[in-house]
Length: 597
Image (cartoon, rainbow, N blue to C red; front, side, top):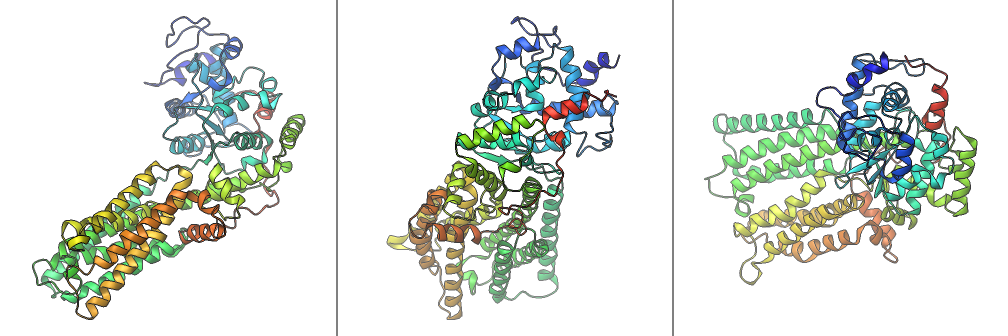
């Protein structure tokens, strides 16, 4: 009776399989007759046992509905809270109480081939443990799903759970995992709160295959639910401060036209401080809030000065233009706050990947001792044990492991956090090398005569960098963003601010004062920014003599999260008991002695 109810419980509402499995290759119907799973899996190659992103999203809804109706219930091995919608039941529980019964009624195919009997070509390989919560796992996969990927291999949905799993994986190099991973374009690692997945030998083997075939490995991260509320709060603070400051300047006291330089200095100080603070620093949130409030006051002040005779800084930048720029600077602080939340999430995932991982492949465990020996022997046969250990350490420290990052690490570069990039850095480059020179060019506030093209050239260089950044791979964006700020934006802005301040102090300021800093930006900082960004982290590290030092300076000149240095590239003793339930074969063995509730 319980099994008879499963189809109703499993596919509520508009969640329906798109190609229910049938025995023959006849046209498919949504609820057709069952197929022979063993024959189907013999006919369809393992590299096509895949699901779509929508399938995984639907599966979350299916699990939720079954938990609510009691079809998936807590057990002695997994005493989950049915009301919890963040972590959820562990994967081995979902497999026993949902996947196996439902696929059994369809002839024992995998969930993936039950939905897509003709198979889907593998683009993405997802590696994970079975002791993690299903909601936590799915949320991370959906949030981190690469844009160019269509279909994913995920063992719990891709392997036929009612068939001979042990037989399928008895020869690692010819297992479904190996075939799917070779066909994929990249691998997504899903950390969990129990232990590092790299304490399990099969996950190590998958890292070995990725290294052997030069495939990138990415770390999955969860969505940040408080992000919209935090950004909305900063926006409201800016708007309130802008309105209150405008009312104060209008009704309470007369704003002095020479206040612009002190206000510019204050905003600049907080912007630089925000960029230099560690992502986990308690002071960073305070700095971002104060920066937003200062931008509100300064923007209101600039608009209040409109129509008055220009003095000091307003000779170089008209008050309305300055007001807009300070308003946009508030967006920088909002982006920096978003970076703070993202970086905290990435640090947490890096710590989870390292928990219990000693840094040595030989310490990885397996439920079947013979599997462990076969996998380690295959890695030793290729003499790749140190290289695979390095690839995993690069993944933990940089947030991803790609040929470029692994190459930089081999040159001695500390790639801690190198796979991360921030919206605030991107925004700074867009401001300094696109918006700023365009205002100078359109308002004729820079060079004249034969050099009138200078601000246009600088804007073109900024646009070229933005296009390059968008076209770059994820492993290059962190380095490119660091270069854009450290080599391009900060030197240019420092040069411009000091030049204008000196001219204001000597009373020698006019609409052409920005010409010299703009020339430095167009002919020095801009080309350097483009050249080093184009080299990439691997190319820069490979430059003879200065490559290692220059790359380390650039990477660590950008915000490097505090706490991550202690979590990576330092082998530790496994102090966490990563239970054998993390291994799919042993999960089956454990649950074979336990009846399904």
